[in-house]
Amino acid sequence: DIQMTQSPSTLSASIGERVTITCRASQSISSWLAWYQQKPGKAPKLLIQRASNLESGVSSRFSGSGSGTEFTLTISSLQPDDIGTYYCHEYDSNLWTFGQGTKVEIK
Amino acid sequence: EVRLLESGGGLEQPGGSLRLSCEASGFTFSTYDMTWVRQAPGKGLEEVSVISGRDGWVNYADSVKGRFTISRDDSKNTLYLQMISLRVEDTAVYYCAGRRGHGYAMDVWGQGTAVTVSS
Image (cartoon, rainbow over all chains, first blue to last red; front, side, top):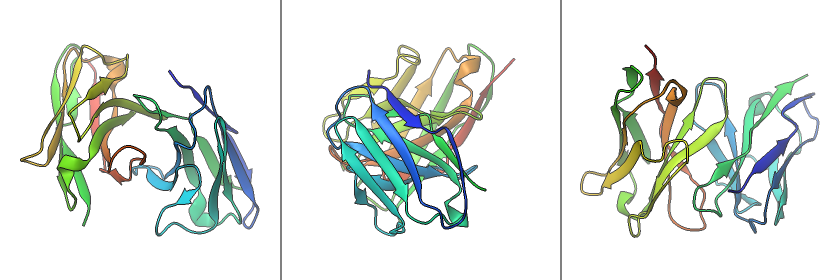
């Protein structure tokens, strides 16, 4: 089974600050990597798929990069609406795996 | 409007059974790979089971293999999850989600249905 490891588990940053979340896969997943944002009590929302393809309607503050086993999600300028938990997700294997999540808070 | 609506959650005793349903609308359900993802209280996301739209291929997480059965009725645009021999650790919000096929991530999600297993 593919394991996905996210870091950090919690992130506290100021409004306007650049934020980066890292996700590592236990084996190569090419670019089959998505990023989701989840707010409390809500379903996850797809932000990015294929490692770097921004979903329609998602703010351009969000960007993704990486391939193989190392991936990053960057928020260029943190805004209040960006608070929530972010999950990376591989969809290369037969049963897809999520990272453990990164909770983003405003400092 | 693209929509997934789950139902069937509730309180069940350990060893009991529940059947979750997920009704789809606003997209071509039969062509979508569909999955159930659960989230235990205060925890992360775990994919429980997947069924492909192309050929009905299914897969399960080891934690539910032999106890949960995923199925779909494309004539009713509905996804199901039959859960038997429920355990306390199955307590979670269960989301159905879908993707348009290989190479795509899950871009359609329901609002979730809560399952509580407790005596």
